[in-house]
Length: 200
Length: 200
Image (cartoon, rainbow over all chains, first blue to last red; front, side):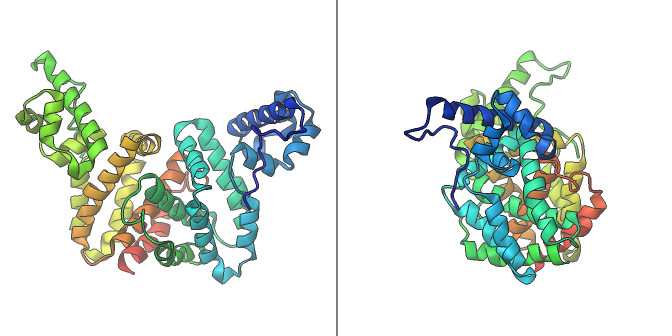
């Protein structure tokens, strides 16, 4: 669950010294590509070219485009795994699973700093906004849309907005009482709202 | 509605040249005080001392503490006026009035940049986070709480979170379709969620 795929700054003892440099160069190129062209527009071949490495090395180090994207965002968890857990829930349980999953990620003190950094970067640069837009749109929501093909995209995004707003007030603005509210109270308050968005 | 109370950088033709400087000094001191001590902890006397002006001048230029706070935040509208409009609504109309009022402020191209700056500052500094917390908590929510004394504060904040999240996705992340959705579609989607939070 906590697997990091970037490892750009870490080197195994037996790894050649330039392995870390090449990984770091790939991640830098990936952030520029994703930030400039968005998730769908970015090409792994172009990332490789910009990082001056063989495209096969990008695959070797980072796997798929989605995995490279996650690594470039320096998220401390794999959203695909989280989403797989959402998708496994019965449709009736989905609102609660999504709310609990979201609060669980933000409630984890290891996950929160990179999530905050992600949000912060969206406010401070065009590239950051594009990265977050692509992450939410192309990674998170596209999976949810597959799971809930009949739900209007605006409804899905209204549900996401409810959760994003809670994260902002709870962890950035730190407004009381929402900042200190027990997770169970938030679940009780948010699940009906999310259910209303998703299920009408 | 669009009255600005700061005017720190502007000078009337007959006003002495140092009027603008003193206003600017008061606003700088106010931002420091509010950011360091919060809305309730800040004192106009201390602001005046820090700006090296007479306390009466603070009142003369900026009026009440709430008005100084609004001026220090460089908001292009007076939240008290907006809130008065909310308070005038029948309780049954309140969710729709609040949603329309919020979207109306963000939809106004003159109001949006300072609102974005306010959100951005909360992400980039402790002082910014404190300012936004005090603004939402002591200015916006305290009035709403008076209007809806029986509503649990967590419910009020969940409603605010719904709206804040929409502003983040629509205007910062600019995720489609919520970024381009007509205001009427958002009203239709958000009013039931806000109503559920406020009215259970």
